[in-house]
Image (cartoon, rainbow, N blue to C red; front, side, top):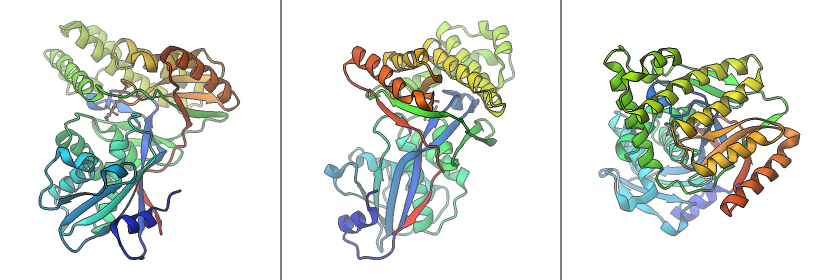
Length: 390
Ligand code: GLA
């Protein structure tokens, strides 16, 4: 592990005093995709990849940010009194946005700070590097300025940064998983009420593999917002006869009775995904609690098919990986994870079949796209926290 305190002292020219390191993970989602902003359930878990931060309060109001992932950009500087989004501040808009909304929420930050970040989440992989930097900024601010921010408020502040500062209309899943994660547990979250429950992930002789398509997620933001709007339109049509606030309130059976209210067939398909996915998520938790891993895997596969055919967010890269995984012995289930449009898939694979799995998926993918995917074994870890003192 890189000595962040040492790097921090070097970059910002600080003396040798004790400094704390903070950490916020990335996340995978086991099932429950594109359900969060539809008032449904999600089932994510924090992973061991994440973002580290170290910082020190300043005597003036300057904010100076440095990322070891973008050394060519150097130190990005702004002021506590001007926290408006600025194109030229590049990646530093994430911590800037957090500081702005923590202040707006009424917490007191009277001094500037020097902050250094380092992240080991693969870039653009859809494992929530953005929510990770938001949450690590949150826990660092708590410590530097002696704030006590209720964790769920911090999660909401992170989502606000995405929605209002960066213009991505995302739901609450990523910040929640990262803020509230627990080692060896996934979180069942009702995104309407924010009621949640931890579920131990005991997979016996299996591992969760993450497979990165290594495809750039260029259109992800705009397509994501488009899906969200399509769901809103479907909901509005259903509301002409049904007294519901979100798609998550409907069972698949009720949906089938009323689906013709949705005029546009594309919007109808989007709603069908959101509603059936919500049911799959609840059924998956049930299967897991009953130790029925086969059923859990079958629901993961059905989730991918629904995201491919009804929600249309998978694309050839993720489909190739999931479909190759389904053909492979020792695979319990496989699906895309996160927003889609590239990014990562996950698969539950028998431990002693991992090598064969990797080899087959790799070969199939490379033959089709001419480059390799990357494989990781996921370790389910704690949410944002103090990492250590150096
Ligand atoms: C992204 C968003 C989440 C969620 C997923 C899809 O990760 O940030 O809020 O909508 O996509 O499930």
